[in-house]
Length: 399
Image (cartoon, rainbow, N blue to C red; front, side, top):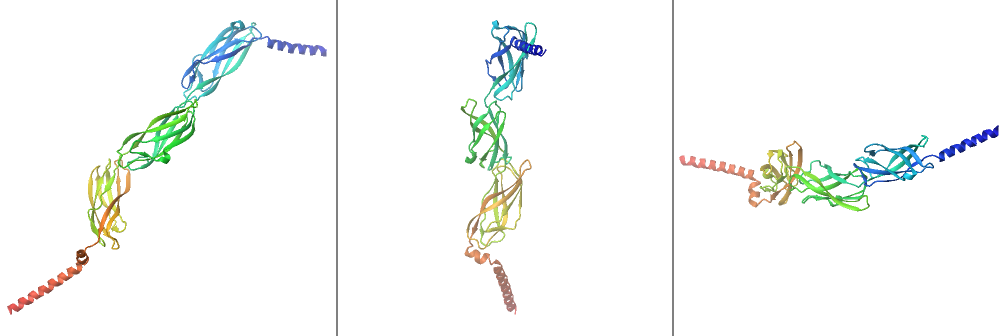
């Protein structure tokens, strides 16, 4: 009885193996893409199917493709192949695949399930995975995204931040980004070239530059060039230039001419007139000015309200100043503090360089100017004396 059971078991195993060996088998023996598949594009993929099983023919063959992101199908995902025999050789079928616009370069898996039957309608299937390549290249874009200060004015030294975007489907490597500003702007040498080791596809990087805008720069939008050099998908170094915009905002630019009035050493409350001119392209509204004390000049600290000073306009402002008695004669630097607003209400406070001349008193001034009160008393006394003498002489004459 045991021998009969063992024989039956062995017979069953042999029957299974024979059945497995004597079955149809359909395989993908090759595939091709006549056109490279790019991001945001599509391409045909041709599969070659062959019957490779022990049995010559497979019947009712169907192929179904199942892609995954970033690959998708354009058109049907199922193709009915029909009957396929060894004698037929390879049978070609074609699927059309799309690549998402955000697809990165590289291989992407696509599974293909092939179902078929034997002559007696026994079902079979084969699953194979394909690697569908998405080709690509780096594509760089750039724009100014911020600056410090936010508004760049003539005379400013500003930090400019540029965002570099790789909107392509392959990484850019060993990037050198050099900012070239239009004359007379200047990019500080220490920040002129930024280095980025690698910028992956669909990623961004920020680079910063320090620029100087001369006082004479007119307001407006200026085009600067960002010169890029990087290694592409083929390992080649590529060079290109991308224009970026730098905006210079209008602002008042105040200049103060040296005082037209010289003061003497030791003078108190001497009048000093200063001419203020707005050389900028914007009005200085609600302008207030005062002298910043600096040896040997001092003031009572009073402020002068000028009001609105239009572009190109001038105004004369007078202050009472004191010159220290320890001062030496000569020309002295002086600063005028100005506070004002622009058209949008933004407030500014700045110090403007000017100058004043201090003179040594001459003999006449020293004798008569410094001691005027004594001379006044003497003059009054002399007048009184002469008046009395005149009255006395008149009295004697009447007598």
